[in-house]
Length: 160
Image (cartoon, rainbow, N blue to C red; front, side):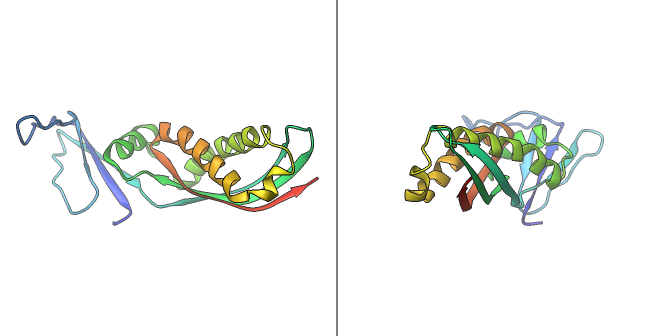
């Protein structure tokens, strides 16, 4: 489908043009069709669908005060070839729920890390900047799995 990629492993490819770099041992198809040679190749489907990660995190500020943060983040496999390959090898046979279970603790850790560097007064003044900081840090960690954070939506930051 349009939100799936097929990663075919096995047979080595030859460069199609002089000087063109190729990766040996796999190919990726994101649109159209392809033939798979069953004895020489095997295929893995990977979903490119976005996955919602709701969060409800209590974190401590730099000054020791606490707040409860609620919202959601959206992650997906990045659509470049390298990320699709990385996701297919790191997240092989994982369901969207498995991927959410993998990404949620990373998101929680990044929220805690960002909150720990701020005071309670800084968040209401710049909630969009705070969400952007979380998304950037989250992206850096997700890239190890071929994933990307599409958005972080901070719905509420409630002091406790």
